[in-house]
Image (cartoon, rainbow, N blue to C red):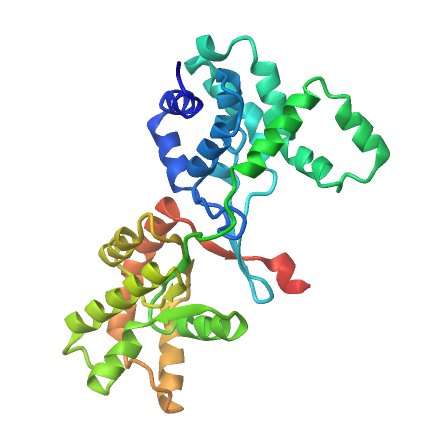
Amino acid sequence: MISQDTKFEILFNRLPHEIRELYFSTYQSPKHHAEGSVYAHSKLVAENLPDEWWWAACALFHDYGKLHCTKFQYSKKYGVKISSIGHECFAKYAIALYQNLIPELVQPHWEMITQVCEQHMRAHLYIDGKMSNKKKRESFESLEFFNEIIEFAKADERGRKMQDGLPVGIITVGIPGSGKSTWVNEFVKAHEGWVVINPDSIRKEMTGDISNQSRNKEVWEKAYLELNNCLVNKENFIFDSTACNAKTINTIVSKCRKKAILCFKIFDEKPEVCIDRIKRDIYNSVDRSKVPEEIVYKMYENFTDVKKYVESKFTVLVEDKRRIKE
């Protein structure tokens, strides 16, 4: 007798490698899904369903859309929000694309699987009493697989954990003078509970001069120690550095793998603007790193490639303009 979680794994392993990787690397809000990734949640859902292949397929495909529409958004009012609005709309597409990989295991239930996956979010509204319109309720109740949809939604709810989720980490990327630290300072003033890891601050602490590079190795060792403390204590953090090379980025990412939900905040500002800001800050006696103009230009050349690298491989934190206006 094959257990339900084993059935889920068998179906999961028939998906293309790159899709499986997205299941592992796509995280949900730790507030509502402390279990972590889409994979972790989907497997928990499968374990809470009746022991049938088609139910395992429902668990596999119901959150497929999150692989493609999950967004990390920031607003001054709400902080960082992870959302995947409309993810259920992707289910039909995913089933059509991949059902040929697993037909003999779940036939002839694809119509039921599709309807369950497409309707599971509406089912939560129905169960919670939030579908107040009588005609909408009656229309929902008339669906061919209404009972299966409700049963699945209950398993979907049981497949969530609400405590002990991973911390969220923001990594800033931008050349000196691009506005990183200004943004970080405003962020931590508006939102409590975030730890800032800043190599410049550590450099100032160690040498007395924020521009002194003589103990750089020790500076970064301490920065990574502070990062590890955040991971161990599950504290949300911002790693505030230029991060204008792939080596630094990959080092931070590797230390956080499976220990934090990461996103990148990119500060794309022209070097001339950054140079002007640096000069103005120094003139106004702001304690900041005195980066020479030629270094700023050189870092910007690296930044252009790093930006493309980050955008192609990782999650980027974007401004939620709608909420900023509210």
